[in-house]
Image (cartoon, rainbow, N blue to C red):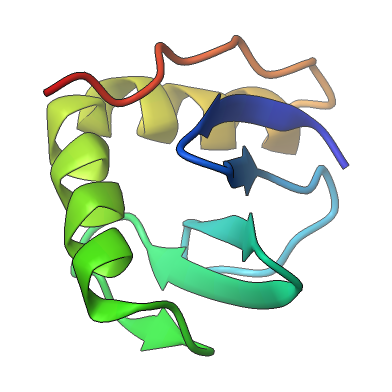
Amino acid sequence: MPEISRFYGVIILMFIDDHNPPHIHVHYAGTRTSITIEDHVVKGSLPKRLQKIVMRWMDAHHDELVENWERLKSMQDPNPVEPFEK
């Protein structure tokens, strides 16, 4: 389970054999959430404030997340993505 970023206690992961649509997995304080890259559909629970931060981070790194999804589908390792910055 490749970790691609980490910030504010949030761990962002993408799985090599995951299903569509393209999404990330967010682990935070014992919770596990997935969020789609294109339309930010959330499955799971994440504190609202943190959810907004993760979505802002996703918007700022959209192209990198899509590229990592494609890399994983091609059985390549994902590239790290810079953590959230204020």
